[in-house]
Amino acid sequence: MTQYQKTLGPLQGIAMTVTTFIGTGLMILPAMSVAEAGSFAFYAWLITAAMIIPIAFIFALLGSKYPSAGGASHYIGRAFGAKYEKAVGWLFLSILLVGPAVAIKVAAAYLTIIFKTSDQWILFFSLLTLTGMLLFAVVGMQTSARFQTGIVIIMILTILWLCFIGDISASRQVIEAPTTLSQWQQTLYATGVIFWCFLGIEVMAHMGAEFKNPTRDFPIALLGGITIVILSYLSLVLLIAWHHTYGDEVTNSQSLALLVSKLMGETSSRLFAVGAYIIAFANVAIYILGFSRMVQSMAQQGALPAIFIRLNQRGAPEKAVFLVGVITLSSILFSELSGWKMSWFIEMTNGSFLLIYTLTCIAALKLVNRVAQLLAMIALICCAFMMFFIGQSMLFAVIAFCLALSYEYMRSPKSPIKGPKLHVQ
Image 1 (cartoon, helix red, strand yellow):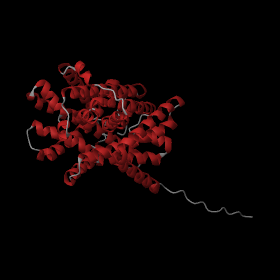
Image 2: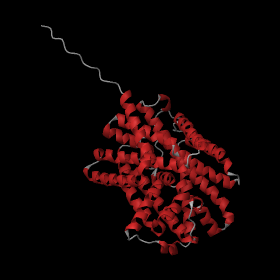
Image 3: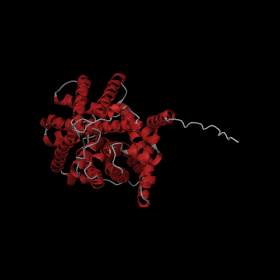
Image 4: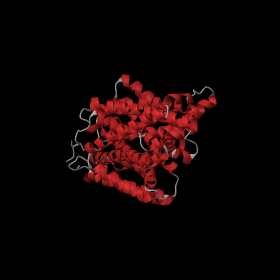
């Protein structure tokens, strides 16, 4: 079995989009943005959303026109050839070395709150969480999508309840528009932090082949989900700023727990920790699915062994999931033993995703019609703008892509040199 089952509709797609973008970032990014930009944080989020929407439209257009489990690598391959397609696939897989370990350890930290254990248990809980995510990925997309839909409904209801008891209408008083140059610099600098929230467009692109009607459903799922994400984050930014549950790194990481405790009492903290863990689990699990689809797609191209092509009876790439699990396990152990800061892993992940988005926008200039090319150019300018704030963290992605592209050129068969023709007189 090598063909994906087309089981996703627009509502399930919206749910998966929301849980792709709302996960561990929900626990810390709103508070971090308020700490960075102060009363200008609301505008910082609007600016970041305005920059990400053109990029999302490009992925929606390409995903509906060229549905493939390869996602961005497939689009880039259609524009520039198989070598670039495989190189982007390797770049995407390189994110496994720096990305999932961060999110899994954040999720595991909530288990220490639930079970009231010390931080020494985080490694054990990380391994337990990874095992659960791999099992989750093996059950197949339809089962996963149903779980994601339930999570999204609970999350939206929770945010609406917090808005109600937290007096969201009064919190609008904290909104202030930047006017001076220094205020604009403060606001724009915060967009570099907020960008992490929107990492995941590429992961959703891998799911395009599993929609029942990709041309109609994929754009609805991606754009509808992003709209819900933006409204959710903006609501929490206002509530956190209004109730002053932000500050240093420790306070920012506990900002939502502090908000819940302030509005509903301390007895709700453990219940909130359960919900936070479930959201984080669902968020990283969809990444595991996306990475597995990428492995299966690369195996079809011949970049990886053919054993990763086959799917199980539930339509999940079981062998690919196992490979993703091994790499993620190595990343978790390395981050634990090396003692490197989590911020380093986050910055490298940002740079890798942004490079993939940039290459996709360049590919779109060749793949879409003239009207959409203008949108692709705007999206490309947005990517360049974000590169300015990510800065040297782009180095990991650039090196990984150059190495991958060089490898693909070296392994490609060389054209035989034709000898001179002999003319018999």
